[in-house]
Amino acid sequence: MVAKVVNAERRASFIHRVDETPYQYRRFVPSIEAWYKRTRRFLHLTNGPLHMHTLPRYLRHILFFAGSLLVVVPGLAADTAQEFRVATEGYRYSFPRDHGSHDEFRTEWWYYTGQVTTKDGRPFGYELTFFRRGMPRDQTKTLPSQWAVTHLYLAHFAISDLSKSRFHYADKTSRAGLGKAGAAQDRLHVWIDRWSAESPAVAPGTQTLQAADGDRAIRLTVSSGKPLVIHGTDGISRKGSVTGQASHYYSFTRLATTGTLTIGNESFDVTGTSWMDHEFGSADLDKDLVGWDWFSLQLDDQRELMLYRLRRADGSAHPASSGTLIDRDGRGHHLLIGDFTLEPTSYWTSPVSKAHYPQRWRLTIPAQQLSLELVPRMADQELSPKHSTQMTYWEGAIETTGTAQGKPIHGQGYMELTGYAERIPGKL
Image (cartoon, rainbow, N blue to C red):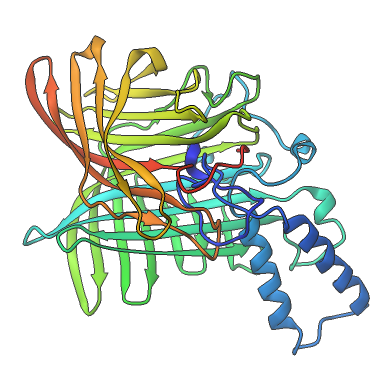
């Protein structure tokens, strides 16, 4: 959802899906612009190619800068957004092209979450997300080389070892150029180093995911038995009350998942179900928003549900909050904020960030006679990325039980909570 990119104004550390500081605009440090000016000054003073002994330090500066912008969404002065295209009504998707990068938009992300089990039933959750942040021309025109930072890329990777209550995450930041990171424009292929998501030309109906950090890794293949779903109305998902405060947003809501997952010295064959979000836009968020709560659910009656609740400082939901109910045949039905209620019923306080997260929720959709209890499968699934977005957020595996038209129903999914450790920056 919108909560996927972080604030380019914080530092570059990790990108939390939720941007702790929220909406897809994860976390950043406002010092990036000053840093960039210092770096440009440094390059000018060298008056020639960099010496080998200065190159490693220069690269570290580039990565630091990227990280600060990383926060995928917000970060730079509002006027810099004018050179980027904003999401407007009437957008018509074309695939496979729209699976690729949209460089004319400032912020973009590809989001994968899922739950898998080993042959003997050991459960895991995973998250693999990639963020792209376009840099304004006035900040790149003085670096006409392959080292120029025209696009920043960030990624988050997490594994929830649900049976042992262990959570591991890692993040990366890099720049487009020299092949270190990038995204194809005509199909799905986004990568940072050896972390990647790709739809192979030989199997366009599948997507392959891979990431590794130390002794933890995934190599997964996902394929959808249902068509993708476009969220919102008339091609846009609204994120505010002003024209342009929107994004283009679609999802694969039920991806059959197979592959391997490695923990320590053990590698497991796993199967399960995943969810994929792809979202891109350029607009700022309303100033009174402090974060958001996002949910994806896969119910055992073959329906899916996506909801996001944009949260104001007083705890109330912004009118642009919405969702999509996907029926058994794959058709999406847009939900307005008045069509559902989300009520927190219990909380968890992080021993690290001290953030007070609502973790158990009661969800009702009266028109569907649907009533659900949403419960985390593990309390501590908090990310505090230090190499990319530097914004703390909670994102993890959940399960649900309840009733649909009076009959018992179960399901699973993922939840993202942002703005509880720190306020979101306010840009997409």
